[in-house]
Length: 524
Ligand SMILES: Nc1ncnc2c1ncn2[C@@H]1O[C@H](COP(=O)(O)OP(=O)(O)O)[C@@H](O)[C@H]1O
Ligand SMILES: [Mg+2]
Picture 1: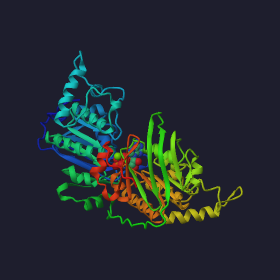
Picture 2: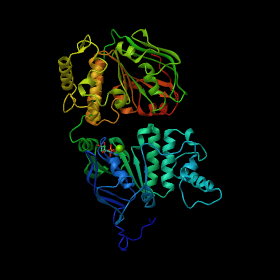
Picture 3: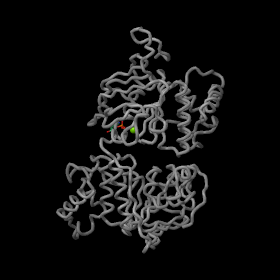
Picture 4: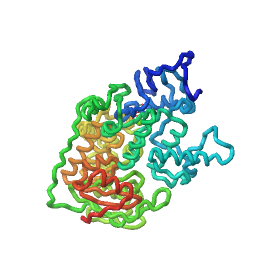
């Protein structure tokens, strides 16, 4: 592969006016899915080009094709007027294309410099890392992207690891930098820093392709945006000619309301449904994941737990729902001490769990929709009488909740795993909420869902709140936390680092706490 293209494959000189990148008529099938359907994308040098679409729209697939991870079934890739054949990431890197994935591909026991140097050719034989280190320091200065080249990777926060990935890509000479949903692992401040660096990068004449499903981000940093829906391009337009409403309509295919009405729940008869006191627990890897966590959740209240993922949220949910043991401290549910009781016992006390890992924990994937709907309730009336399951009761219950929760399924007998993500989540909520829980522990309830399903799930949670349930909402999505919560606790490194009422919270203050800055803790 040539690293610099001066002529096309026929030997014609390069067309100066051709776009930096043109993907033309790209089509890609996966078994049962048309992930990209005749997609055309044109990207200019010196622009941030947003690739906007809901989950499953085909954004990652398109970029994986450009990066050489997948071969398209049809279509062309043309760089500065020159058709190219990209068979692997090695080819794309040689052509100046770099991609930072949602899940990083770094080596944890290596230092930052070693990670960047890995696989580089043309390094001096003696002390090769010195050259890389020097260049890295210069680059991190230039982009205002602080990283310590000698730090081992395991010491870095997720945000810092992302910087390493970006610097590594630029070090390899990327002219086209692809970032796949980069802000999903960042605090608001880290996102701001990233945006500033992207500004510098585009000023140098490089192109940035920024994959996102967040409209605010498009409006904030992109010059142009290409909207995808169901594998197709809906439109490419300058951001100056777009607004949130028009973009969301293109993305979803219909009008979307961003308004939620959160009704006040009268304070009378409030009951402390969940009291967590000085809780300690170990992670799977045996470090202390919870370090003295305390809070309460009342009936008719949503307590949001904000934080960058990996700061103890998962362990907290598991200890409360009986899936992980506490080393110390207490979990009181409706006045009963349920510390270290089984998940079944906790559930019987009136606790619903909307798990983070839907497919593994929320459903039995091979089992039918109707059986999934009565899972864990099947041994009780009205579904069972002695040892016999009552099929007719089960079916009428299933039909009723399918209607009520608007679950799209071909039939009651369809295996649950064949439903879309949003419908699987609605199935889980239907089952969990039909037992009229007093406490709902919801972990990332709308993660990865499309806008319509997200709206429905949020509406259902607010409805439960109005009905007097207490809700512990763990979410990495600040917008969701702020839209739904009455109070917000921020977790950082296993502690509640701040607790505020929703009315005094804003993205800046929450972001600072998510990055570990202590704020006054409200005692309420
Ligand atoms: N490796 C794969 N095998 C099978 N199906 C896939 C694969 N990658 C993506 N898909 C499917 O292709 C569609 C588009 O996915 P993707 O490109 O990841 O969307 P996006 O990045 O916009 O969320 C989805 O229906 C997804 O399930
Ligand atoms: Mg994707």
